[in-house]
Amino acid sequence: MTDMSLREFMSLARALADPNRVRLVMVLGEREVCVCHLVEFLGLAPSTVSKHLSILHQARLVNSRKEGRWVYYSLPGREASAEVRDALRWVRQSLQGAAETDADARRLSEVLKRDPSELCKRQCQS
Image (cartoon, rainbow, N blue to C red; front, side, top):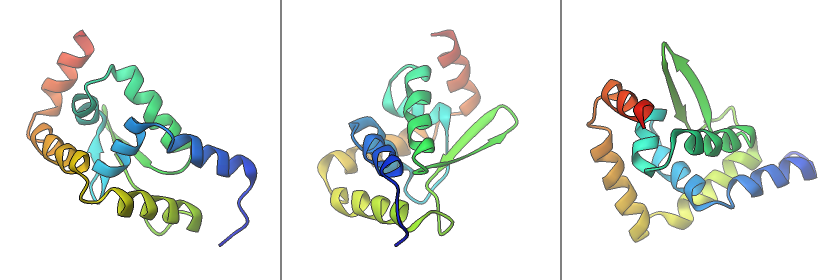
């Protein structure tokens, strides 16, 4: 393990201190998901979901990429620091099989069937 600064540690700890951010980490799993699907999944305002994703991104717990008008988020792979990989592993192992986690996985599966264009249009009108 590398030496993590107090600032980096606090960023990681703050990012994981919110239930909605932990839920995002859990549903991203091994897949990349568009922001519009994450907004629909959480049922929160787009600005709130963006803030949660920004905090996770700042802590390096998620990666993002833009493709046209869509922004996709995923968990980092081997490029992440050992501390980030350990934190993600801890969260995912701790909550794997929990009733809430299973319900969220089912909910995201349903949300992913929806067309991102339609979701975005509806979310932008709200």
